[in-house]
Amino acid sequence: MTPERDGKLMILLVDDAPTNIQMLNETLKDGYHLFFATSGRDALRIASESLPDLILLDVIMPDMDGYEVCRKLKADPILRNVPIIFITAMNQQEDEAIGLELGAVDYITKPFNPTIVRLRIRNQIELKRQRDLLARLSHLDGLTAIPNRRALDEALEREWRRGTRSLKPLSLLMIDIDHFKAYNDNCGHLAGDDCLRSFAQSLKIPLGRAADFVGRYGGEEFLAILPETDEKGAMIVAREIQEGVAELAIPHPASPLGTVVTASIGIATAVASREHEHTWLLQGADSALYQAKQEGRNRIVAAPSPSN
Ligand SMILES: [Mg+2]
Image 1 (tube, rainbow, N blue to C red):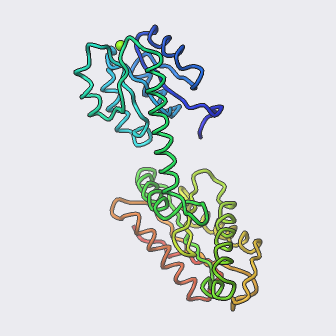
Image 2: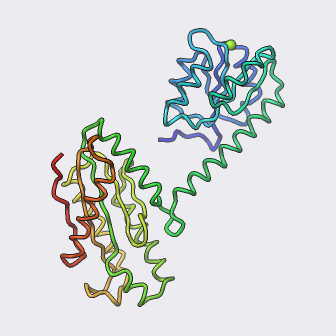
């Protein structure tokens, strides 16, 4: 969970000399929420606990130097994108190439010039803000504003990989609006878009658990990823989703199933293994959904448990 930041961005200051930390603190304390570390080891611990927006990292430190800290940060999938600015003394400029090669975004030289420090940090923070915004936008579905297919594929791959370590079951729900083409033909595409938006919002409510992930997979098809959930748990979530859709009560004058919009859901559950790719679970949910459609729609079908 993201800690309360009072809207201020967080910077981690790492320097083994307390006087340097003090000076940086004076320079930056008005604009940012600051954390401090005086060793590489503390820096790594605080970085993984507080997920800073930027790290100012001294190069020369006893035990673990700035380069080593940088290498470790870049190897951590959660922290690898946090921008790092190295702090070096004037006579260490030949080392700048090493730091930049390791992935640092900039350098600040000692003795500090407060104006330069503030400007360099402001530039990097602004760039990070833009990168974060782009990353968020590229993972959101434009119509429904919930995660898109790319985000779902990444989340599923991540959870599948996590599952190979945890050995806990992972469930996948593939959710499809019944007779959506007839809805569009009958009510028009603008109403179809409204239907998709309402449907998408209704899906989020049963999936209140923080680790669950729901998105639009394409067209009128949605996907819910349920980590550490067995088939029984997945069935409960699927029923809640169907109840939520029923409560929406979106009129569907062209549905042969009744008067309102309904959904079919295919469930697949498996303990992840290295023998299969995450797409294997996707195929399971897809064929369960196909079966639900074949059996008359507006129903939930769980794929038979695959034998690992
Ligand atoms: Mg130092």
